[in-house]
Length: 178
Image 1 (cartoon, rainbow, N blue to C red):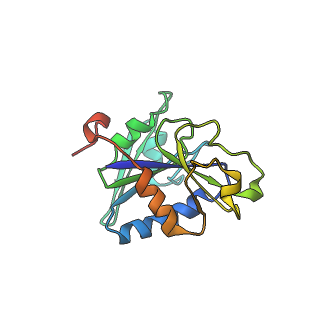
Image 2 (image 1 turned 60 degrees about the vertical axis):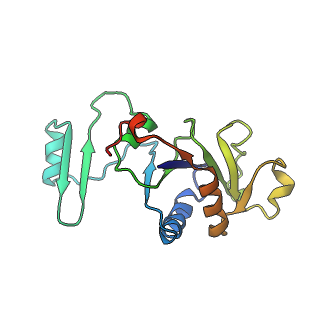
């Protein structure tokens, strides 16, 4: 099992890139799961549904299952937000975990950058950024000489960076199911 993060400002194209990377990695025989950090309150449940009512009544966890999928909702109810390692440990082991967000965590990351955002680069301040993916016409002129890079639209080149820099993680160290 390995993990790689995609880090960047909102609007840089992280989600769009992940949606392109998953089928490209699947086609190469990799089983991929994703973990996304949300900076805002979110809800995958709908008011009025039984599962929503269970949570509203105070259930810590509600698992909804069908013949097609299952989902586990866990209410923190004031408990601290789990760490990336704790969250990865809750997922079924796969070949590669792609993490979107979790900018402050110390895992290997690719910076995703879009010029039109007008935002600063993250790599100068984050030693865990191993490569750069962006829409800069000539990245080599802007990036440090040691920084590997690929264009946002070159999925094969980004897949190569993902596979080169994804870090191994030990399932037992994370408490993952084996």
